[in-house]
Image 1 (cartoon, rainbow, N blue to C red):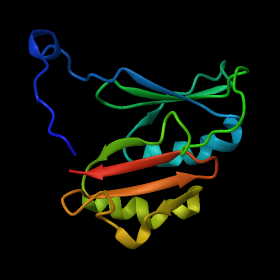
Image 2 (image 1 turned 180 degrees about the vertical axis):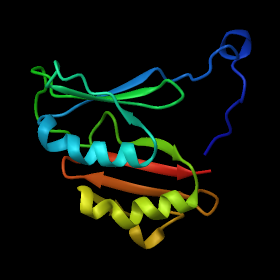
Image 3 (image 1 turned 30 degrees about the vertical axis):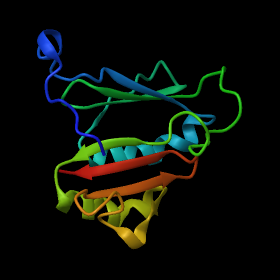
Image 4 (image 1 turned 90 degrees about the vertical axis):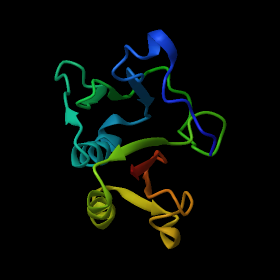
Length: 145
């Protein structure tokens, strides 16, 4: 993996978090939301669902970034992470203990482990992570730095 600069210059240094939000579209928010809710809540994201918006769910991170899951009327077809577009989201977790906990519980909450035979180094010998996929095909990589 290439090295990235830690500083973005005068403007980048002022930003606490460069990610504002990530919005994912689903073909069925009611079916997908429980797996997202369990996973994101387990790693410390706070659900902030607006009851007046039944087509969407939102989870907020302490950094200010948030993830939106939306069932839009503009969705055409099903999600396929192996086609052009989003392959997966990589989020940090508190550490290896939290990673192991999520791994142990994930299958009970709609997630399937990917690359299980290589856990926890499927991303390489110096990369500690857990790769999960839900029934709709959304993949998350949880990284323990």
